[in-house]
Length: 356
Ligand code: TA6
Image (cartoon, rainbow, N blue to C red; front, side, top):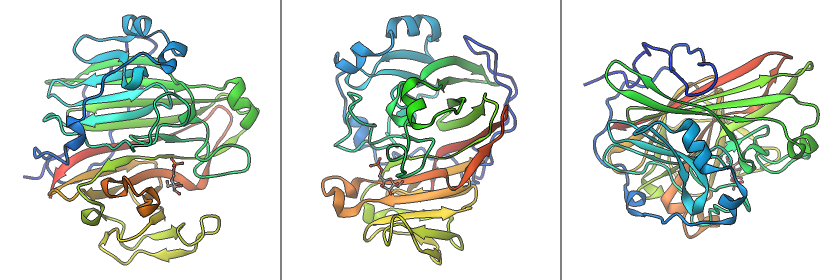
């Protein structure tokens, strides 16, 4: 039965700290019903044992954060993977998400039945020695390589701060939520001098739907511009079975041909499939696509504000894991976003598991 996956909010959230953030209507989400079947599910079984690490030792005070921002049963600040300070959101329906403060990276998003939807590469490090290769890393203030800073920018290399948490009262169930913030530091100033930016990233569990709200504020007195993306890794049940629908007729830049000067082409297929490396940036790709993961379920990617969609599979250049994942990313990757002095920019993405 067709039903909206995202209901209109009826009440403003009540953050534990700072002023509540004004909300407008949620993004359009696709027409399908929420799936109850497991997605791929293998990661759900891979328990990890948190242990003390350099990352935790050098990072924020987890106990102090928990005391300030924890909400019993809904929001917990804890030592997550390999001790990384993380925020766990738990919805009353049983869905959960875990967000590492390092990189503001969503590392895990599980359905109510415990199925993991995201993917972390086996070479992912959780000791801050490099950005986390998995989940939903940020690309900001740059998508891809560039002359002044590392590939995909600095946001995925830094500890974000917790700005607020809430368990927003819904008609029947609370939506656990955390808002993270990234502000300029000496480190960012070296690469991106003079930009008085503030990035606010809100992650909410709306039932089993993972909702992200990404805002860039310009608190300076001169405009700046950036490119950005949510570099989302999804687990698939075999890359040969994965399909991305909803991109037919869109123009894409094929970075497998020339990463620096990619030729453009028009997508003629109903579904993007994988039989070799794929690194395509779909320009002005619309606000809805689906990743069929090969189990009879799909992840619906609904967005607002993010203009482009990037589809990436490294294929055999990552021999040990390429069959297990692909990235479907929403971004403003091609045309830089300009934010005027005192202005802001906002983009949202909802991820939901749907039955095919
Ligand atoms: O988003 C796709 C992409 O930009 C590819 O071109 C590929 O370089 C990939 O990201 C690699 O990301 P990584 O996290 O390994 O730097």
